[in-house]
Length: 278
Image 1 (cartoon, one colour):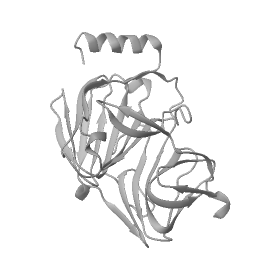
Image 2: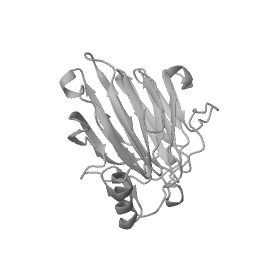
Image 3: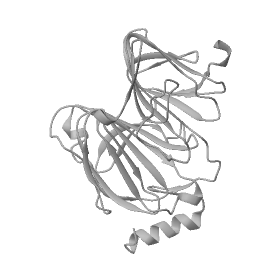
């Protein structure tokens, strides 16, 4: 099966950025170095034990046209939105918010000290679904099933593994696979994820080898053509986000928190938000 292993065709360490009310983060996807990976629009990695880097959080702000996936590795974050959803995610927990036709939400730290660490991924929606009703799903670590293999605990948020473990998030058009891999020293994770799906690995801690490339903490690697993804942890083990999804193949027109397929639709989103129609 070696000939079918997907190579890493691009790596990036992203760019330092600030978002919300001044939260410091690294933008691994959605930067000049890597604009988008259809169907993925953005991946932010936040990681700091300095409260000054995260305490101001993300006060109420709008979204339309896509989905946000927030996965916590350390710390606690509270979500509230104007559709009546509210919840707190802790380590190993995930929030999957479908902004779709429009939502206004906030994400605020539930701590004043300690490490705050995790990822937020933006997943695009096809044009036919961009204006459907907004929705929200939240799962704590206990409800995110684990695919346990030799030296690897793979927490499966979305998608189904070859061993039959299926994540709680289902019914998404791009058929995403989203997992956090917790890997011991030298452990190997191999899964049949063909190149019909765009795929990337983002290293939270430790180091890995995948597709002929070495990736260390804070780096993202994009997989190329092939049938299988194989990831090997370094000497100190690793924690890795592995994501894949079917490309949508439609135009992407983005203006900040609005992602549509035409400029007219983006202008309409701005108008609808200003006039309180979210």
